[in-house]
Length: 147
Image (cartoon, rainbow, N blue to C red; front, side):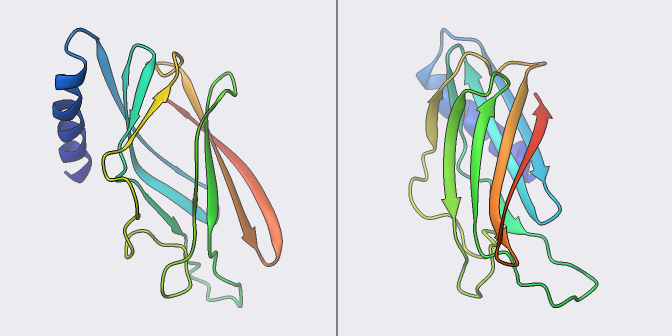
């Protein structure tokens, strides 16, 4: 329900900006073993892509209760399928010392970002690169989602 509301809000916002352009709305989630990125909404219109700033990024809590240090921050890089960079963001720990934007909303621009790309279309792929530190080792993982 939340994703549907965000999609309609994005469409309404962008309809005034691009009444002569065709638009496509994409929503996706991506996760690694340790970090999850959820509720990402992209609205593509020709060579521009609007990134809705309502996504959530959080560390996945292990149920086995091991002595593992919690993930405290992550860098997320978005690339199109040609590996052309679209956007990057770095989010650190919240007040409890854990990466979790569900309890501490993202600071900054609430309007969202407009990115330049002609490769955000149905059937194309998007590459999400997660970079974070786990047990004092830097981890880089890529997740590919199809739009």
